[in-house]
Length: 255
Image (tube, rainbow, N blue to C red):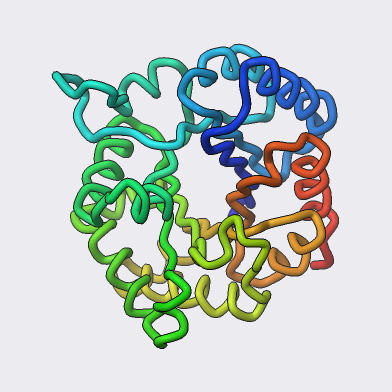
């Protein structure tokens, strides 16, 4: 049985006061939820203070990016070892904004995944297609390439420390959302691909999250799909009431 996960990606938002208020609300209102893995991914400056607040709670901590070296003369970069040292559980790797705005390649993403796993962190590995790629019928080939190159060299013993997040780029921050059928089709495709490069047991156990304008109003319908194991939430995770409601609606969704 795969444990569902709802993880908030705060991106480059919040200040310390806002981060503190948000986490305080989540601690108070979600403390009794044990059947859903809850995570937050603040900007780098707020990782340590947020960790101090959520220590010994049911909320896990994630970073939004990393570099693939343990240390060195890499000004402005942060290693998985550093993130592990301050108490992170996850690292988001390969988010579309990193791919398309920061120029990250599949090879760079693969290096980051390997580095995260080596350090004992869970890699939240993001894949997804652009609108024009979907319109041109290239969705599956794009996702296949991202999976093949991103997971190259990852051994079976480590793959269960990977969470895959399917995020159609055309639905991120646009207000558009993949239909439940579209989400299921792509999550099923990803699971079948994992079967082909590992095996059916690995594929059955790996968690695949949906991301792309996730809201309280659509989470239940999307996550009711058999291959959707939760969500990587963007802007809606920045408001305590909306993020909490997403989690509660997921918990109460029809089985």
